Length: 135
Image (cartoon, rainbow, N blue to C red; front, top):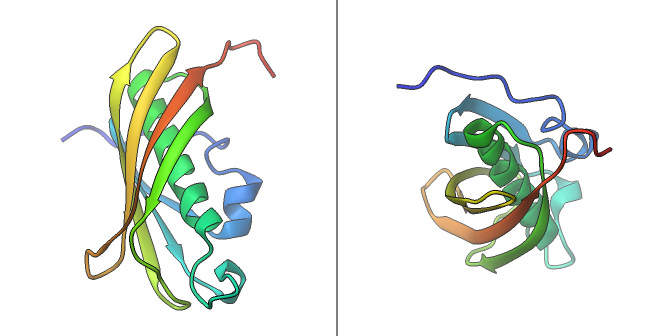
């Protein structure tokens, strides 16, 4: 098993802290995130807002890419399929994997499941490597 690695503070952004995203067990090629659903995560239909799903998937894909390439990236495209809703009090679990690493473009896939292992959402994302001196 790969040695556990440190995910940068940028992955633990103020936005992720606001949402309550927990980045757990980061290892090379595998990052797990979780989120306990609270009232502020719900939409008008009383289920988790799609933006919450998207945000945690974007986070887990970016963090996973960082463990594989040690490069900073920005999302340039992402597509998500919402498969099942989640309600307040439940916890969602997100994981990702790197599909392809190019010179400046990286593709990753992610998924969200609940505690019963029900698949809630899947995504594929395209990320651009940013230059180290870019701010």
